Image (tube, rainbow, N blue to C red):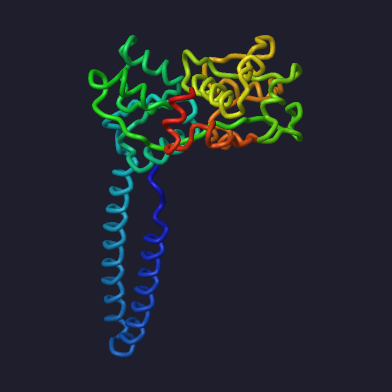
Amino acid sequence: MPPLNFSCAQEILTKNANTKKSLSFFITLSFNFFTKVHFFCFMINVLKIFILFFLTFSILMYCDDYGHHKQTITDTLYIMHAGSFSVPMQIIKDSFERQYPFIKVYAEACGSKQCIRNIIDLNRKCDVFISADKKLIDSLLIPKYADTSFVLMSNEMVIAFNEHSRYASLITEKNWYSILSRNDVRLAVSDPAADPCGARLLSVVALSKDYYKNPLFYEQLLGSHKKIIIRPKEIDILSLLDLNEVDYTIIYKSVATNHHLKYLSLPDSINLSNFELANWYRKHS
């Protein structure tokens, strides 16, 4: 249903009110110059004109309103996107469909690599693909499956948790790796083979090993498979946090903020957010 134009309705009502005042004034003056018979005939004619105007106006308004309501969908737009983009994608989709009611948008969330498999291996229709990793588009989709790509936004890796996470009140930028290395702390990660977020987690660990000058960093943080839970994509981890089945995850900041999680920011040297440190990221991850 198209949005109601309250300002237009108010203007019409105002004009009608002013018309009624003018008409009353005119009738009052006419009463002094016409006989009762002439006045009666005059009123009949005015009434006919008013009824004709009212019917014409009503028909026009109905036709206009009917046209808006009966707009049919004439086109579709198929979008695949990384799971981390689910919340803003829903907002964009709703806004787009309100502005263009004749276009239906279908949006599907997967891990970025799974989206590419859907496009290449399953031949799924896709007009727009929003990936968490631009390099995947450039290396796997262009030029056969895509024409071009561009950076839509940037992000950064953070440590996400909630108020029930073990040692939530103690974790800081200086001790986070020792907290996450404790035997009683459960860590959830997304699958590096299927999801860029999981691959970036491994980059964060590799960068941290050099940044903190700790050659055993990987073994201490991820060496114990008993406390590591792996899910296909980062969105799947959120339910584990909600159910308190895990304590922490290393995830995109946008996902943490969209789902109202507590998070700890990491230094630029390891959070993969600073374009000026791109060479450092490539060299140490």
